[in-house]
Image (cartoon, rainbow, N blue to C red; front, side):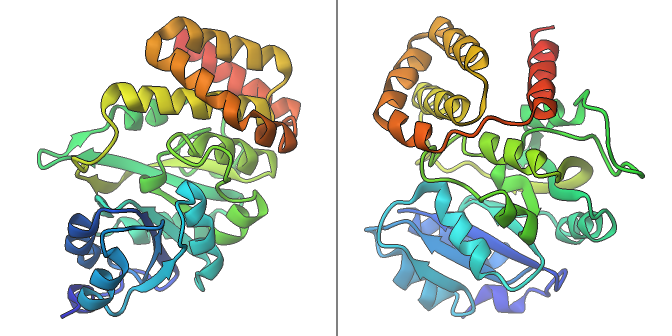
Length: 292
């Protein structure tokens, strides 16, 4: 029986897009929590995920990519969505009751906003993720005639809703960075295309991290790789050098991540398009604020 079929649709303007690979049990258990139509992108799972989802949740649209496309799989999900707004979820996360509607209302009433980032509550004790506090404290000035929340330049994919047209206008997630750390380039490009990103306090997602996720040092390494490639794709060369040097000095995982980026450097260079100065200024402002 499809548990999701018993859940009311919270907002008909929203589709939830989930990308997953080899997390069959937790994915099948969690899909019934979503209060919206779901599109699942399977990144080449070898554990029978697509078949299991079709049996347990026949209402979920399952798209088998046949390979691991990383975060770029979500872009295909957004293309397939037939609603104006798309919320992302991981195989170990789901949107809290009322939050899909709250984020959709922001997008409906503030046409300059292309992405809404909400709070992330971690684990059974619902601890606020530290990144939520970073977003809430954003010093960036709002450009909206009627501000709906702090303007931000980053987000967690599992806690974000996008305006479908703005997401596709900015190119979606790319196949150079892949995962993790895929959000940074998209946040910059959305802003460059004139779409604001805002943080919406009060709306939230529940995130119960999978035991199959990266170990902390492995994640630091992977994020450093993504940061180096994103810098090459979008920043002036002095900023690329500054950010890369900071990672090299941070520790062994970050140094390994910078070395890992070399294998994909040619792809990053082919995609290189330096951001407008106003976006670069925002990025520099946030770096200064983080440095204290």
